[in-house]
Length: 180
Image (cartoon, rainbow, N blue to C red):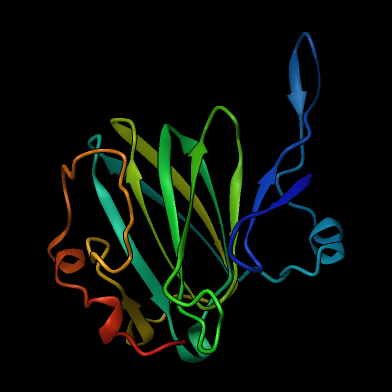
C-alpha cells in the first residue's frame, strides 16, 4: 500500500499496489502491520456501506464527538465521489480548513480520516457506493455535523447540488460548532 499525505495533518490517501497477470490482480486494501508502521489506527469496530443515487447528491458533513469520536477509512466501491473532510480539532493550525479527494471505484483509492474531522461527499455518478471502516461504533447521541453549504468553508463542490437531506440542509455553520 502507498500512503500519500493530504494537505491536513494526519490525513492520507491510501493507494493499492496490485499484483496481477492476465487473469486480473490481487491487492491489499488494509493491513494491520502497514497501517501500524505509518502510526495509523488498526482497531476497527464497525464497517458500513452507503449507496447514494443521483449525480450531484450531497451527504455530510458528519462527525462523532466525545468518546464516540472515530477514525474512518473510506473507499468507493461503485462510481466516483468528490470526498471532503473538514478539520474540527481543537487547537489545530488548520481548524476549519478542508481537503478534498476524488474517490473512484476504478482507481480503488481510499481516504484515511483521523478523529476530529467532519466528512461528506458529492456523488459524481448516478450511483455511488462507499464502504466505511469506523474505529468506534456509531452513537446517535454524539453525532454532529457542519453545513456543507457554509460559505466560510469555501468548498467548491464540482457539480450543482441535486439532492440534500433535510437533516444535512439544517446542520449548523462552522462558527456554531464546538471544536472537537
